[in-house]
Length: 563
Image (cartoon, rainbow, N blue to C red; front, side, top):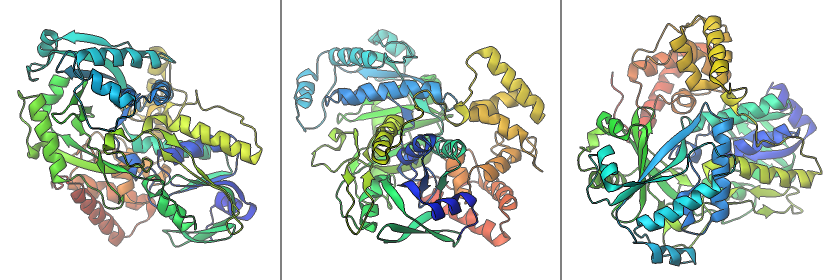
C-alpha cells in the first residue's frame, strides 16, 4: 500500500469515478470531474500524454476538411473549442495563419457533393470555387467566441510573389486562420495538475496498470512495486486505441476501435522556414490527400499520413511514409531542396477512431461518442468508453461525459470549464501592461534579466511564478551544454513538481527537447544527473535511463544523438 494520503483516502473510502487512460480525453475529463467535487482517480499505464496524444499534428483546428463529409456539427464544435483554447491556454495555443494552394478553378464540386451525400470513394481535387465556399462556411462556424480574422483569397501572382519557391501550377490560394499548440504533452499534464489542485479528493497516477478485477473491486500495480484496490461507482475507459484491450481486461469484450496511423516528420530547413514566415501551407498532394507543413518551434513539421493500423504498441513512421512526404514537398515547392538528411525527428501514433468499413481512412469520422456498457451481476459498475474525438475538442467531449456522470451519480454541476484557464493559462495577463508587470516581478524574484523572463513566460505562462519561487541548489545561469535555452533550474523544477518518473518523461513530454532535436548526448547526461539528484537515483539507474531514451529516439527514426 502506498503512503500517498490521497490514494489512501480513495482506497479506504471509495471513489465515484475511475478513469483509465491519461491521454487528452482522459485528462480533460479528470479535470472537469475534479472541478465538480467528485471523488475521482485517473490511472495511466505509462506517462501522462505518452500515447496517441503525443503524436498529433500539433494543431488546434476546426477541421476544415470535415465540411466535405457533412460533419457540420463537428466543425461547429471544433472551431468553438479552438477559439476557447486560444483564450484559456494562450501560453500553449497560438494563431496559425494557413495558406491553401489552389490548382484549379472549378474542380471537385461534383465529387464533394457525392461525398457530402455519403460516397466513401477516395480523394478529389479541390478548386477555387469549392474552397471559397468551404472557407466562408468555416468562418461562419468559427464566429462564436471569435478571436481571429476571416479568410482571404489571393491571386496566383500574389501567391507566387510571397512563395516564389512554390510550383507555378497553382491558379490562386486561400488564407485562413487556425491555431497550433507548442506542447500538447505538457497540456495533458497541466489538465491533470489542475484537477488535483482543484480537489483534494482527486488523484492522477502514471505508471499504474490493472492487475486484477474481481466483482466490484479493481486492483492496480504501480511501477514502484506498490499495489492498491478501488471500488468505483463508474469506470471511464479513456485508453484511446487500447480501449478494446482495456475493456477485455475488465471482462467486457468490445470492438469499438478501428484506428488509423498518422505519421509526421520534422525537418531542419532554415530556407523553408524563412519562406513560410510563420504561416502553414495546407496542401493537396498529387494523390488528393491533404498534407501540411509549418514552423514548429524552429523546425518544419510535415504531416500527416492516414493509414489503417491495428497495433498501437508497435507504430512508427515507415520509410515509405517519409518518401511520400519528401516527394510531395518537392512537387509543391520545387524551388527548395528536400533530403532525408534534413529529418531530425519522426513520430507516429494511432488515431482512436471508431470501427469502420470505410474504404478511405480519411473519410472515417473524427467525431466522438461515449457508448456505455451497463453494469452486470459480475461487474457492478458501468463502463463508459471514450471513442474517437479530436485533440481540439477534448474539453467539449469531457463536458458531455461529465454531465452523463453527474446525472448517473445525482450530483450537480458546480462549475463550467468553458472559460477556465489551463495550467500556465490561469490568470494570464489580458493586456501588455499586466503582462510586463508579471514578467518584471518574476524576473526580480528569480534574479533573471527581462529577456530571459520573457522567454520562460512564453514557454510556461503564469507557471513562471512557481518556477522562479522554487528553492533549488541549481540556478538559471547554469544552462544545458548544447540546448542552452534550458537551464539546470528549469530541469530541477520540472523533475520535482511535474510527476517525472523517468528521463523520457522530461525530454519527450514535459519539454520539447527531443521532438525539436534541440539536445545532444551531453544534454541528456546533464538532464539525467539533475533528475537523478532530485529523485535520489543510483549511478546505475541514471545510466539505464540514458540508455532507454537513446533507444527510444532511435526507434522514432531520429538521427543519433550527437556527442
